Length: 374
Image (cartoon, rainbow, N blue to C red; front, side, top):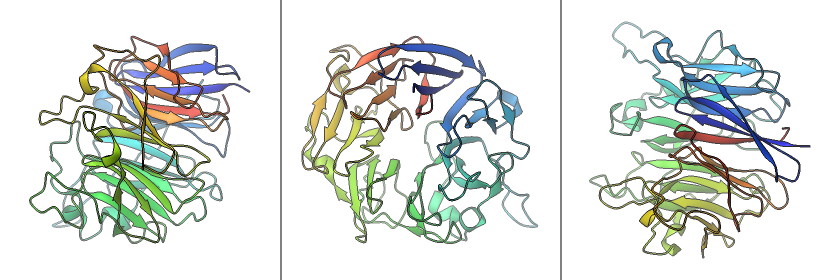
């Protein structure tokens, strides 16, 4: 059985189709040329089904669904949107749909979506119609959690990293840039901030309940009580039922630091994960440190890190990798894939030990996702 990578970019989506050995790859596309595509995600519960988050220019934010592996697409009849504001209420509008997550295995047809500004939506009919998750979007503290809708985040603040506990369909985590990490144990009806131990160097007070800037949050599928986080202020791990994040990025080389966007976990080993650092100096150039890109892997839950750059450019490579643009397959050994802000796609079939370029000259890459069904 082959494998497919969906590459979402600033000007459309492309597909890379690989053979079973992950040795030969074929680039196909574009799909929705000229349209900003933020995320393309395959449904593991329904092979051949995909959802795509797009912003087609003046037509506004929407979601498309394909049931035939991406050959044809149908737009949602009711895309994610805030309900009309009541008398004296605050009018809000979705700027773009940023993140898509399939629901729990026990809930076929259920999907979650995160938007800019920071809001959560849910579909129960495979992405055809979407409803606002009132427990989050209409919470009395929503404005306090999310802060200023023009908070300076490039391309707008976002709700991302929607994670559903594989043991419990009602247990959901989300990340807000900005805002922090929030947990619901009742399907989104109520929410609790979970940010203890996270640095907030950009805030007047270093110890706040919310207002943080997580870049990517992952619940480990093999140990759902363990979470990893790549944050604006470092790399962290949380082991429940504890409620305090530990900064594991402090073990990273000091000349590289622990600032970046993506966070990828090994599908079977809770102690193994990868990050892709970027230059986090005072000017935030959003490039690889020193123009020398590399992934960093830990096999001991963050106690130590190993640089993995074999095959990647050794110098003068001034790109970085966005939060959705690095991912892994579930094969053995694990395959890793990343897309760059320069429009390249790189892959490793040996868990990061060596890298090869699969595509170049694409538009700025926003997201890379794996379709194991090919």
